[in-house]
Image (cartoon, rainbow, N blue to C red; front, side):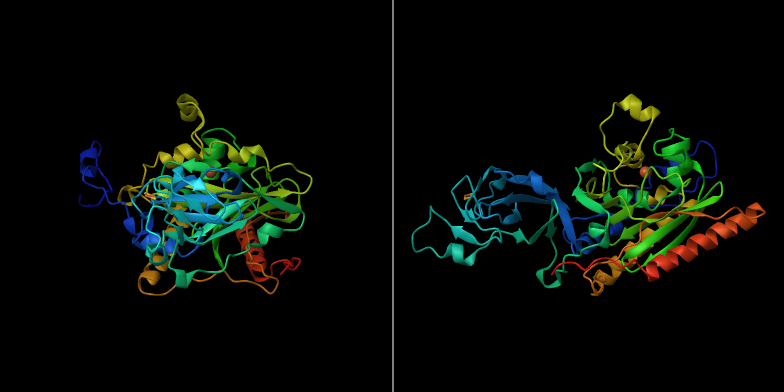
Length: 426
Ligand code: FES
Ligand SMILES: [Fe+2]
């Protein structure tokens, strides 16, 4: 298919679109060897929940790769290629063992690092097991999630500990999986699109969080040491409500309370969610999250889950669509050549530019920036909601200026001077 300009200027001209099918593979395709796939593989990615590891192996697909995850009787977690190195039987039918996993077909035993420990059907003097390995990826278990590093061994980064994992007055709990039937980038772009909060979640499909999300925000953006953040400031009576939602490279977002309404003054509040959009393949994505729960609460407000997955009847989704519907509705992979990005899409444009730049740099041999770690062991992040009593300026243009300046100043201050946290134990 060829691309051609998609800006239709005449009525009844859909035919002019029929040959446009460019999907922007550079920042959407995630399989092995693709530029974006290689980029995402340079980072630890969540692959399952700890509680999903039982006495049975767990078959998963991540970035187009079929894998099996299991915890052996020693407690070690393995993430191996799904298909046995011998003749390809799926290890989802294997026996989780004292050490590693044993293939059901001819009994080969694989350690969690892929070493072959036993080939019971082979002659005693066979050296095959000492020469061959099953494909394996390193894993790291942290607070209810299992992560894997699927990139080249020599570029394996340290496992980052974001400050939101240990914010005073909160605890983190690994959340359930959420599936999106679309490319991973759409899921990320949704988080860089604060304008949809005022429409999809408030004006066009009824209030899904709070009415105040329907107030159009003044928008700004700021680079942060881990990625970038949008700065949304809203006027709520005599208050200015500042909301920062941060993108953390390569596929994480942290965002604040969806029950915020900007009516009660409060200092910086930490995010309620740290969320990854992990590609299953090019057209399916699974979100893994830590929910960041304030002390004294059992969970974060249930509204955050509204419309996130395909769990409602079609008619209801048509009448009250949620994020799942909006994203899957963009096609399985959005055709960028058919979009008409507008002023309100600055966040989407910035995110695409950010990813494209880093993906191209990696292609040229420059490794992505590592998460900076402070003297206490944390990687500092910036998502928050803050409500300040600052009465409106005399005129609307002056008030817009006041909101923008306030938002910018606070955001710069937060990025430059993160609050101190207790040192992480060694
Ligand atoms: S196919 Fe796995 S041991 Fe033969
Ligand atoms: Fe949303």
